[in-house]
Image (cartoon, rainbow, N blue to C red; front, side, top):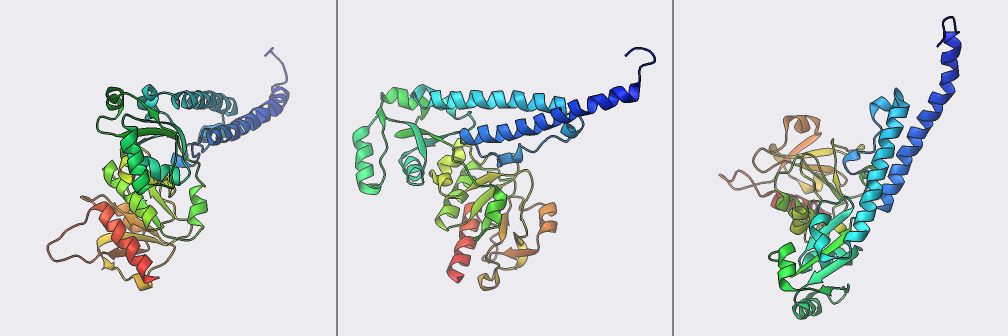
Length: 319
């Protein structure tokens, strides 16, 4: 800027440009959401679409960030389409956003029954697979490619069947919380097999959703194996923070009052902690109510999935 130039006037001239950049950042964010939906990725999972706090102050930087992020999502979409073709792509599919790997007959048939889009399925024993289908799932049909046993075992050492599906789109968790039915909240679950078993129980007992916090991804292949593919039957979310949207938060706690299903709210968020440590003090302080499952003297805890099953079915039978 030349000496003596009108600095306030120059700044005023920059304001329209900054406003355009700010709108560009917002539009880019909306484009990310649309592309995530096209990839079958639930935009609300992990709540990673919330605009960075710096975007209000540095709109151009924010726009560039979201443009880079969008390019990454496009690469995931292209990779997802390619991976659905070959058995060799299964291991990479485990690490690809928007795809899930299903192992075993029950996992695949459950997923298909509840609307999964299967991109590829492989078996080395089509006769045994068809025998299972005729006995257990005549309502389910999907194309399967026959491959060599050694090739299949290189991907799933003990599996008879493996498939890659597109991860289903899900409503925003607040939409679920505004509706009927109990919601299961797992605070920082540690064991992915137990997490999957909880999803399986929740689907069977007609829970509205399963929501988790903490480090573990509830869509991890080990959790999908534990649920037998029933992630496709009930919404499953990974949250950064507890959400209730006005529902009563009920903590399952050994020191709580005895569970009395007849007096229980029908649209509660039911919070369960890890088997060893239970719920955190922070979550317990947020809860409007603490309840305990009755257990015989000397028994200190139940398996996580067992506790969830006992609670959900007690509420269901009380209706």
